[in-house]
Image 1 (cartoon, rainbow, N blue to C red):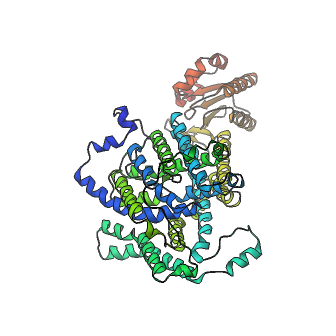
Image 2: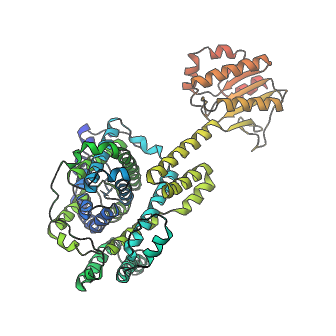
Image 3: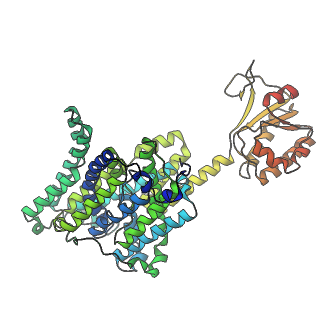
Length: 574
């Protein structure tokens, strides 16, 4: 849910870091320092891995993990969200950069910077229009289907570097795949599978073992989250020690030392128009994912997230990453949960993590050269596999078939049509499903539970009914989309019960009646009066009555009446 705007001075609302700095304590710093160190351990392998996943030089992932998180720490309202390169955005960037029309624009790195700038501009424009609640327009099933589909694409994209195969570039040609599997690099396979085993062992198995040994929780978190860094260090040492570059083991290669030089390469206006659709999708998904993650940790601590301020913070972070030569950024689930679990109290943990990464980029970049891509692929796979939630489709299908279909179609669409097309299809299906539900509202024929004033559905309860009186409860606002359905329902019931002389529409759940619905109700009332049947209303809400009083509907309704309670209508009409 979104929260009301803060009562603090407006300057504090636009620069949230000032709010928590006022009450910052030495104990908070101790907690943030520990969390920042643990988060920094993830930044190097993830930054490099997600840049390579996007088809970009590794430094773009590292640069995106320094200044953008600092920008978000100043402007963001979540105290634990970790902003930087993320897997879903990375594969969307890869999809954009590999599309034929974008390849014609030339340099992928330059296109990536333009993409980052456009994502930032779109998010800031959305904040000006106060579109923070846009997050509510993508349903959870569609988002889950999209995430699962994109994660499956990521998994398949990482199998070649993990197992030493050349990337597939020939579609579904059978001969291409046979050639692919005939040329494995056994040393790369060994490195990839060993890295995968080590990462898995640092997950649940090690955590369970340390808990049995009664190791403090924070120490368990620190040790278990060292898996990616330890994997990188060991595999890099092996590649360097035994000169495995000579055995055609793929490595990251040279990474420039020092901070990125600030530039305006994203001002290539001729690139903006073809990249706009891709940037819009990346901005939408980055925002929805980030706010969803931020709300998870905020709710755990009873903190508040300002949806519109998040647009400003994420938009500024993406402009900064473009300015500093980095790829598009968003809130990362794994890093955020590590940051939260490690005890981060504020965004100071992010500032510490970004500072440590900055030092690593300045002094240790040469050490990144021999990092094997197989180890990075293993890190991505371990982070991504939990995001594939096939069981969620079954659960959603059982609860709501419309949402289940939208989730399944989104997943299949992402896999078969493409990322942008898949999520668009899912959103369209969700809207269609919502419109269908709205156009077929639940209408209950109700009766009175004996010896009470409670009225319930005749199909669910033993109730009193009357031959000449029909009580109908409409459980939806009445609009152009559903008024004909309501009209048809009433007509059908009158055919079944020809003795009916009085109809009472119970409006407890009706929040609005639009102009089309009003006209249809007036026509229905006229038809009923010609058949000597009187239409009445009961329990209408104040705003609905206010709208109806602006018309002559109540005059046309006579001799029908507006009753305060259903019980009052029954006492007079039964």
